[in-house]
Each structure stands twice: as structure tokens, then as C-alpha cells.
Length: 318
Image (tube, rainbow, N blue to C red; front, side, top):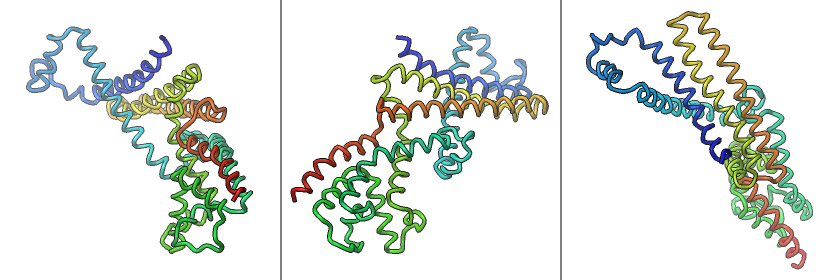
């Protein structure tokens, strides 16, 4: 019973805490502009009348509701503003390590090794056939020249590759654009295998929330650990985001000392939140490595790997 309630409580505390801080900053900023009860008219007058009409409990509930809305909006804005930076400069955010909220350089390397290990049977099958991924993903493209006709085994493996994952088709598109001189040279020049590993790694990173959800019924204790670390990270990040807004207000209304102290607290909380988030992702990736949970991309890869023995056996008989 408690394990089913805790995740909901954890989801509430981050927007609530951030919302209270944003309302505090708003109050400090606007308090000099609020007229007294005798001079208040219009909206200000209506708001001040609530003090006499509503009970303290009712006012507390209303403020809590507004704080939750404000905190939820600020949390969404924070996430939406950080994602384009991480997607635009993924290597830079990994190199920063301590500042990246999702994956440290070591964790990114672990994820890359995990993807390469799951794809190893496919690479071994290509080695047995003496073919390459570049050749397999372009066999069905008539725009590209081929040095020799494909064998039946190559076509069987190519069909599996084409039908298993969208990443393979992206590779074929890059190859075709490179051959016609229309594609991005740097990306097309990378080895196809490295590109496929990078694409699957990126997909798996975006699918980590699904892998975490899969733990709910399969590994409730592990889910509790992963979710607790993630919630603590989000809580600290949300509070830090609101504190940065409070820093500006304190600098204008109170003084530089209060603003500086608040700024240091916000930075510390932000770093702690990033560390908790990375710990959550590390536990989740370890669970994926131990096959205690999975993600859609890895399900597609496993389906391809499971199909390899039958295709190789069929190739030997032809």
C-alpha cells in the first residue's frame, strides 16, 4: 500500500515546493505595489475581501493549489528549455559530466557498451557472411552501385535488418545522399556500425522512462529505488530553479548579501539534483544490463537476434 502511494507523493512535492518559492518571490516583488485595504479597488479590492470571506484553511488550500500550478508550469518550462541544449550539444553535455543532468561520461560509455553487446550477434552474423552493414542497408536501394550481386544469405540477413529497426533505414538514406553528393558529409562519412550504435544509444536514452515504468510490476523494490533517486533529483532541480528567480528579487529588494547566499544555495541544490538524476539513470541502465527491465529499442534488437539462427540455417540449405 505504501509503495503505491509514495510515487504520487514524490511527484507532488517538487512542483509544490517550487510553487511556494515562486509565490514568495512574487510577493516580495509586488508587495510595495499592493494598496492598503482602504485604498484597494478593482481586482486588488476583490482579492483583499477574500481574507474576510474565506477561512484560514480555505486560503491555505487556495494558495497551495496556485503554488502547485505555478510549480508545475515552471518545472515544464525548465525541462523544455534544457532538452534542446542536451539534444543540440550531446557530446558537450557529456563532457561537462558534473553539469549534465542525465548521463555522466562514464554512464554514456556504459550505455554504448550495452548497445554494442546486444548488437554483437548481428555483427558476428555479418562476419560469417563476409559482408558489412554498409552493404546490407543499401542492397534494396537501386540508386547505389554494388560491386557484386548479393547472395541469398545476404538478402535474408538484409531483409531482417530492414524490417527490424528504423535506424537501419536512416543509414541507407545517409548512404544514398552521400553517393549523390546531397547528404551531410561528416555524418555519412562515419562508419555505418558506429552510426547505428550511436542512434540506438540515443533512442535508448530517450526510452529510459519506459524502462523505469516496466519495473513497476516486475521489480517493485528496484523501481522504488530508481524512482526515489529521480524524484529527489527533480525536487532539488525544481527548487533550485525557483531560487534563481528569488535571487533576482532579493537582489533588488533586500540586498546583494541575501541574493548571494540564495544563489549559492541554488547552485548546490542544482548540482545535487543532477547527481541524483545520474544515480537514478545509472541504476536503471544497470537493471537493463542485467535484463531486469527493457526498452522498446532493445526489444527490436532482441527480435532481430532471435531471428538470426533460423536465417543462417536457411542460408546454408540454399
